[in-house]
Amino acid sequence: MRIGVLGTGTVGHAVGTRLVDLGHEVRMGSRTAANPAAVAWAQKAGSSASFGTFRDAAEFGEVLVNCTVGAHSVEVLTAAGVEHTAGKLLIDISNPIDLGELPSFALLVCNTDSLGERIQLMFPAVRVVKALNTINADVMVQPELLPGDHVVFICGNDPAAKVQTVELLGEFGWPAERVVDLGDISAARATEMYLTLWVRLYGVLGTAHFNVAISR
Image (tube, rainbow, N blue to C red):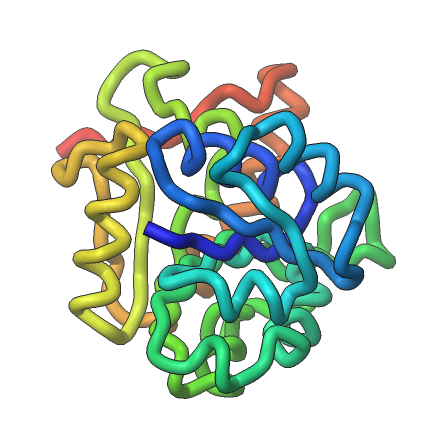
């Protein structure tokens, strides 16, 4: 499958590399056609990896993954072009971090709205599924790093898009029974607000390699 990864940071590199390793063709998108981080990633990742602008990556991908900083996600998707995103699954990993409030990790939107909802509202033809935004990049793509039946959350309005997301998460190593569907895209409020607890846990545990398990 051809997948467009939007964003050149830690999450973009982790997701892009794992997708290439799984046999997918991946194009990493950024603001410029030859972003140094994207170029370096593609050279290291191999022949199935390429780079370009956000628009290039969106046009290339049958599936898109938003790995950008949440404060810029809407701008990035606008740059990608409606004609290149319409009808496609967008796995949204972003969190609405207020960069002006670091290191407190305040959120730009919460409680009655979420970044996932705003993306879906502003790009109604995109099939948005919020996923993977509650865990560290390494754990996203290698859940076996942690013992036990820890879980990953998804939400979105399109049932078929969620099925497709579960299949891709399965390739990463998340069995379907450990993918918890929270419902429509408004559930992104809950997973995005979890970020503040995640930061506290990181400070207490001294590692980013942790996750949530559900006991019933």
